[in-house]
Image (cartoon, rainbow, N blue to C red):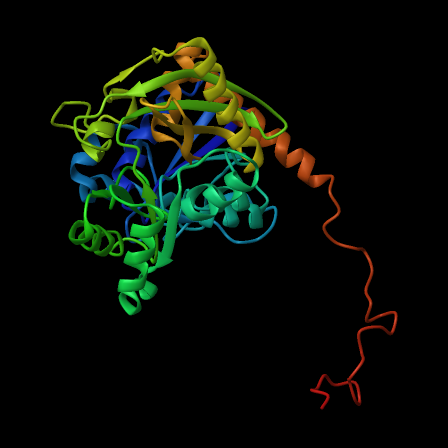
Amino acid sequence: MKTNIGVFFGGRSTEHEIAMISANQAMAAIDRNKFDVTPVYVSKDGKWFTGDALLDIKNYRDIPSMLKQCKEVYMRPIYGDYNLYLVNPQGLFKNKNIACKLDVVIPVMHGANGEDGTFEGLLDYIGIPYAGCDTLSSANGMDKITMKMILRENGIPVVDYVWFTDRQWFADKDRLINEVESNLGYPVIVKPANLGSSIGIGAAHNRKELEAKVEDASRYASRIIVEHMVEQLQEINCSVLGDCDEFRTSVLEEPIKSEEILSYTDKYMGGSKTPRGMAASAKKIPAELPENETAEIRRLAGETFRVLSCHGVSRVDVIVDRETRNIYVNEINTIPGSLSFYLWEATGISFSSLMETLVGLAVKRNDRRRRKVLTFNQNIFALGGGTKGVKGGKFGTKH
């Protein structure tokens, strides 16, 4: 029997549509001679659907019609239960509420409620093997503030930054503006801490622009980061594949931007009128850099992957100051657009092989986790312990 891969995508995220593109690219690349594929689409209101209609990207032009051809499903938060259950069993399924059993999950859910550890926590609770970063590394990688704190602590260069919450901003705006101006100066880049795809990101060259950009970013997130802006910047990306103990890095790419910062349109529209994912964006592969800089960027990408305890495939984005040639790690994408398959194809690994590698990594990690001690086969109550402060065999509060 072939391994059944559940590919989860969509989700309650501003990057919902991009996840659809990435997931359909990934599902098309999976070798059906070796694996079965079960698509699971998570709608913007959080409902799960499965069905063959999800395998044709053209159907997404009319999502309500597409979902009428699908079945709504769910998973139970019970350890060891890998089944997808039908919400409303009908017809032949009236007395059978199991849609199918999954063996491995590949999450392709960019952004909040998917890439930030939320969904990974559910998978961890169920205990099913899944590809990609776990709950902790997903959360740390998604939050730009926490990520930069960890990287700086481990000697990985990042640009100077100031961070605060939206409530702090509205309560103490003048002090925070003064802190940005004294510590960073202008220009700066303002970002929501936990979003990707350049959503809510903007450059500020003066106080008025700073206020406008922060208020825009606060629409998307409660934590805001303001970074020193490298004006003569060169953006370089590198993908990393494996786990934090054993990994490899891809060739480098240089995205081509049309504006001051790389925009959503640059990343996903690829100069066309329709979104086609990161694979379609304008870029140079391999990036044209001196050998020593190429080697250093690949080293920093690997170190970023390692210190954040990442797993599966990620993409590390760095900034090179064209004037000083200083290199800074900008961010990590723990579920990168198009799963960075185009970088691995340029490195000599096919998309199909990449997907098979992700499945293997998922199973390998799950096997290792099973060897760890999580519970003790001992009942302290049966041994007379754990009863301090209890009177008459009933639990109470001891004053």
